[in-house]
Length: 371
Image 1 (cartoon, rainbow, N blue to C red):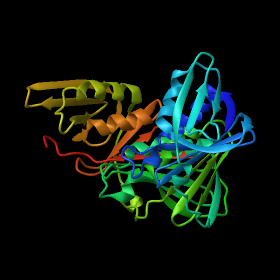
Image 2: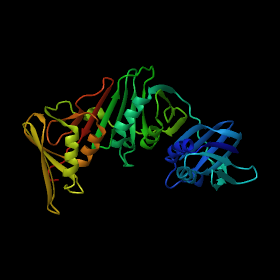
Image 3: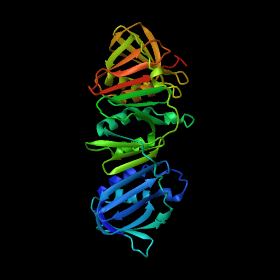
Image 4: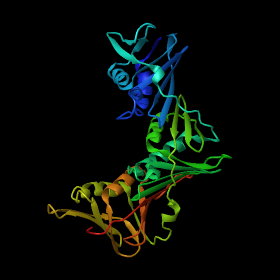
């Protein structure tokens, strides 16, 4: 195998691919990149058996070949090399990949590419084209709300529902829930799937430019094509919670406030909150709110008063500040609305305005005051 390529162009591909490499691989070969050169096209494959990334890059090919090398070492090498043409050479009788730069040479041992796992060929039952902007917005608005609890498999991914005129993304960890709807698609296909957050995080890194993302999916797998990168992953086989059933519809107490002001205040106040609960308490009355926190173990406390628009009964409600800060950091509207019913029922956090073709709703559960 012999080819030359820009170090920066190759690095972009390896950075995304490196995200697939498992921390504790079941087999040593899962730490490798599989590189296949055919003419001037280099194909890079990496897999953890659940998620596989295929990526292609244009190179100056001289001799076709196929090798497997340690992905982290190759990616780290490219990171450390200034942008320049780099030559890669592996002689037939050798087990070494030579990496040649303007002022250096690096020798990287190759592994047996025959050990690289075969990716099962899954029958595709449905296909849908999704604008990249919709896919990116759906991922970025929801992925933070997924769960890390392996006992709740369904919540460890994002639920995506495809309908003829809209696309819905939902994620929850039982403490918070986010529902993002994109209202500007046209498709004859309908269906739903739960995609693991690892796969979506990697896909989000590969989403650049305009155009569509192509989703080909079956009951067990999804194949996502974005430009020169394809991600194949096993879908989460579990029942997603009935999210519409937990979204409250009667919320007479409505707070409207500047998003940045509220976010900044919460960041300051949360410094003084109990580190195990992160609890902050909000007192709502007239057109102002008071935010307070205390840590009785260390006699620390803080409070601030903010101007706002508030319509509803005077009330006191408590939240985990970490959740509110996460949500407010995702929203980008100038003002946000916090819609509440009672201090012990779910609240809704909404942008005060949103684009015509999208709808975003965030749900957060309150906590018991002084809990």
